[in-house]
Length: 208
Image (cartoon, rainbow, N blue to C red; front, side, top):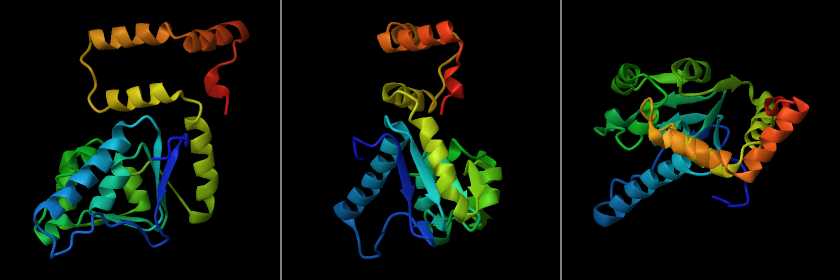
């Protein structure tokens, strides 16, 4: 990812967002292993990295493409978008993308999606949890700009830590949560933001 970018937006063509890995029927051995491992690393970087990542799904997301979207922090689907888990039709299972799908969708729903290779529309993806919003294509730029403005307000260090924390929530009473809170409170930038809030009474969530 470009280190200078504050927010990353992943988008495909109008008719295809992503159909997953290019798995040639002739590929084998180390080349095939490298391809699968590279895709797994890509998803992990998106999910755990220090930058917010938005998937703008305008067309078809199939197989690994559904997992790519699911690994992102936000998913904006066009009204004409589609989401299909097609791996079982080839005798495969979506094992690499399962951890990311399972954070968004009920496991029983996922099981049924895989077994039927059913296709969800953009609205159905929102209802299932695979997408966060759906809109006509012409409204997408304005929504993306609004999301990006909000995401840019957050300090990058906090973004990465929060993303990793939400992969597996700490247990109630966790000492990790206490220590991290104290660490952030000791940061001068945090102290300055709190001071400004207490002095002006202007809540930071009201700023764009």
